Image (tube, rainbow, N blue to C red; front, side, top):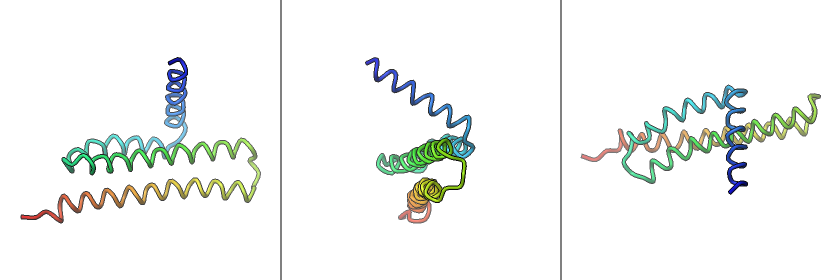
Length: 119
């Protein structure tokens, strides 16, 4: 139980650190605060709600991992290094793909709700 509590504290500390130091993560927190209630308004279907909220959480996960990669890379060296640049680019790509997935899922549910309604 002590280990679980310590892991929870570490996770909270990481969340706070990201919110304090990363503008992109703060924007994603605002997005989540808007998107989660919106997901409940858009659909009554549990699976669709789960997909909508899940994609927002996935964006935040990717952003946190990308931030960790960038901070660790900068700690290793601040000099230009092609390999580190590629690693940072891959982290950024992960965030971009998560954003594309979220956009696709949200557009699908919105289209179903407003454009594909049957009489």
